[in-house]
Image (cartoon, rainbow, N blue to C red; front, side, top):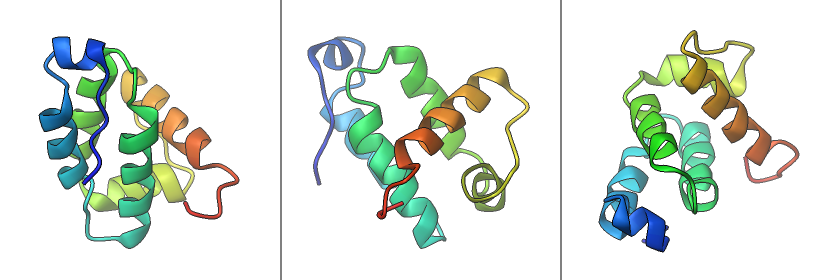
Length: 99
């Protein structure tokens, strides 16, 4: 499993082990969510500040139907930090044939 890590992430405790754990948590009950969340974990978290890693972990704690609404529907999180993160994840996947 590829793990995303930067020197900053390793110093903040968000190195390869944390990245691997988050990648595992990206595996959901819906293949669509797996693809979207894993792509963000691999491509979007690299170099992200520690706060974004924490927000992503909080997002992964939400139920699949809610996440599906955020990424596949028109719903938006009420929490401003999660709303901004969900927008970044959607933007990463926008126009991609993979997600």
